[in-house]
Length: 327
Image (cartoon, rainbow, N blue to C red; front, side, top):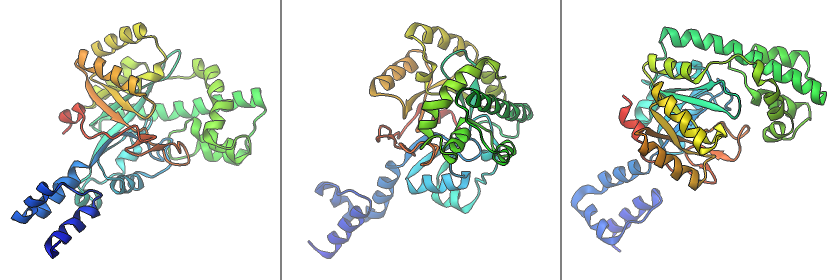
C-alpha cells in the first residue's frame, strides 16, 4: 500500500470505520476531508429528552452539553421537569456550542395531574422569556416542594424514615425543582436504600401513590395550552407510563390532539421494540410529529440509561419529523 493510501486508511480508522475499496477511490480526487466530515456528520445522534441538576438530573446544563459533544450528539434538548431555569443558563453563542455545531433546543417536561400512571408532556422550542410560562414555573416550584414534603411525611408514617433538620432545610432551599430522586438520595445517605431505584421500589412509589390525590397540579389541557402559548410544540412523553389500555389510550390521545397535542415520543429508553413500532404506527395514523430521547438523568440517578443510546443501546436516533418544525 502506498503512502497516500496508508494515510487514507489512518483517517478512516480514526472515526471507527473502513470504507469499501471503491469508495476509497473517491479520496484520490481530492475529496478525502469532505467525505470524512460527511461521515462524521452522519454519525451524529439526536437526544430530545434529557435532565440537568435544575430538576432531577446529575449534570449542570453546561456539563451535559459537554458530555453530549463527547458522545457525538448533534441535536440535544434539555427538558427539565417543570422548570426552565437550567435552559436559561445556556449561552447558545458560546464558543463551545458554536464551534462544535451542536444544536441545543429549548425544552421542558411538564407534569400533568392524572389519577393513575404518569403523564408528562414535553414542550420544544419554547420562548423561555414568555411571561405566562415564567409565572407558571413559580407556581410549579412551590408545588414540587409541597409534593416532596407530602411523600416525606408518608414514608415517615409507613416506614419510620426520618431525615435530619439540616438536610430537610437544604432540600427545601435547593435551587432546583424537587422530586422523588431528591428523597431517594437522602434514603441512600441515611442507609435506608443502596440505590435510587431501590429507594423508589421500597418506599417512594407507594408513598407517592398514597399522596398524589392531595398534590396540586395542572391538567394536560393546561400543559398543552401553556406550551402552545409560549410558542412551543407539545409532545406526549413516554406514553407507556400512562398505564392505559389501548382503547383508553386512543380515547385520551384524540382528546389531547383536539387540545393542541402535536407529537408523540416514539423512541424512549423504556420502550420495547414492540412499543416503538406501535407508537410509530399511531403517530402516522394521527399525523403526529415523532420525537424521541433517552430521558438521561446521569449515572447516579439512572445508571442504566446512557445519553443518546438509551437502555442497553436501544436508541440510536438520527432523524425525527419533530426537528423539521423547530427553528
